View 1 (cartoon, one colour):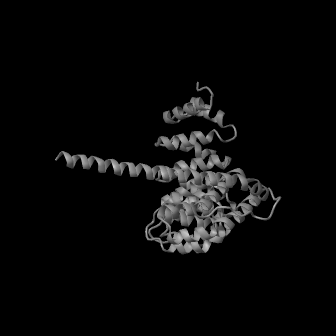
View 2 (cartoon, helix red, strand yellow; view 1 turned 60 degrees about the horizontal axis):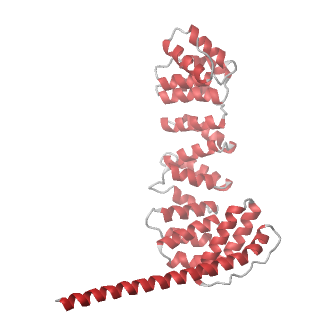
View 3 (cartoon, helix red, strand yellow; view 1 turned 180 degrees about the horizontal axis):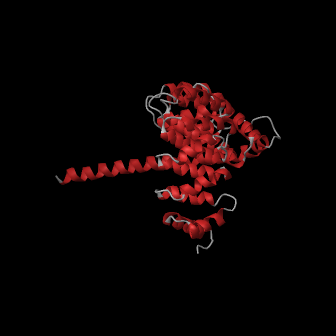
Length: 348
């Protein structure tokens, strides 16, 4: 029995020693690889800086092979990507990236692990490698799961301005509003225009895209789509109307004056609140009487919005003081006093 345990201990010790030797060998190999990569990056950096500065056309060859070559290229290109901006820099970076990485990235998208594929897609995006558009689209069509790999394919294709992607953005199940907003912010003018055209006929069944589109064009203050957003004020769905009103507050522009009184008297307190916000954001001085009515609204949020936007109009602070001292409505007096204190005035 003692002999058995002695042999068992020796075997376990031998296994541990073998694992330790393998770890040391792997670590030594990695250190040598990293040293070679660091030396190559140091050699390449001056020439690549000249290319980025428009002083050199010829792209230097990388004196490495295999994964070391790919990792070195990614490292130096990522460094340059963070150091430069502007369209000329983007074009120079793309040219170098396509020279160094295209062949390997095509192989990775076909046969790489999930982690390698997703990292490749991120770098394709970072380096604006438009020459990989067809490979990315083919890879996208093979995705069965709507995971991060699927989403990154969409990001890349939208950034490339690939019109084929729009069909997929209108398919069920629809992507989330947050993700659609991210994609819309990446779209060029042509893709945005096509998205609006598709929404003209499909907005009833594609609310997520409609909500995202209305929000983004307002945040961008994109005047091209102001008429579309304002037209949504007549949509039968309350949530669409509210999204449109919120977007118009970002535009700080409004022409549908005939609808405004209706919103101010709506059964929906959200519509009443946003009517107040629109009057202030767009400086609609002719609707100050509407705000005077809304400051006595039964809902606190509506009263607050009315008081806040009265302050945006000419002579607004004096008007709040009058409301505080002379109004028969206790709620109106209270919210006017609250707004005066917030603005640094004095409620007497």
